[in-house]
Image (cartoon, rainbow, N blue to C red; front, side):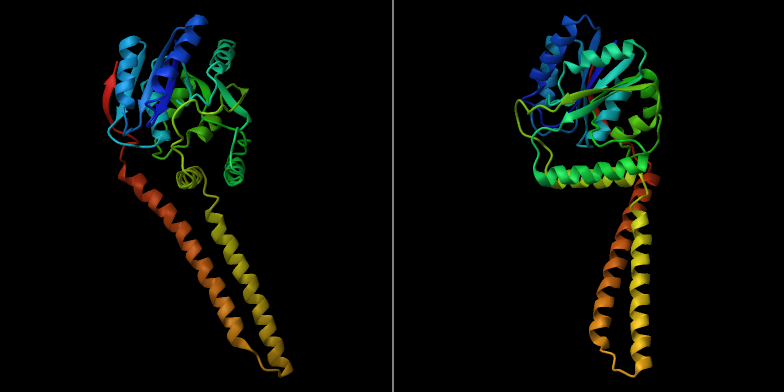
Length: 303
């Protein structure tokens, strides 16, 4: 059986449409399946729409969080609760084309254990968004030694891969990177990102920045190396200023030190504060980790 895991946050306009689209597609291709919606603490009628979809088709199940825990938590909750021999993770807004699920499933039948959806076209994005996404994936790619420039959450995982992921104990797990990191026999399916059919995106620029920072620091310690780089920059500046001061002292010329000291002070203070901020963020991650709180809390289920 194929499980389709669908995280949903304030998607009341898309629940019925998504359920109908995916269910009819899988029925037409004779694929035994279940749909598992994960309501990530929505403030609209998303949960009621999931209940109505379940009443129309018992193969549609639902999980409701007690509050908003984020998309990563919703994905892992869906993978933990799904019952299929394999599972596809797909966005509720149908920007991931549902027909690609069939192609992924056929590849799984051929023996592939992870089938990754790779973006051939990212769709309409602002220049700032595209630049930020490029920088984010460059950092993650360098950290994982895996090309993630066009990676997405749209992918199929065999039960073995699902077990490997849900047994990881880290609290802030980055699904997109970890699902590539676990290995297994992997292939890819390319797709074009579609326009949202209804409703509005819940991803603001600020939310995307927070998402990127959280996932980068959860997966790699690379930002900590910035502290070392800033220290080397300050060392070089210090050596240059020292050589300049010694030369002017040796030649007997007056040293106009006020400007030099102010500039050096501004540089050093800025670098120290940036370094402390990076270190402090990692310490906060450690603090959150040792609290051992769950990734999510489920308040209701539809079986």
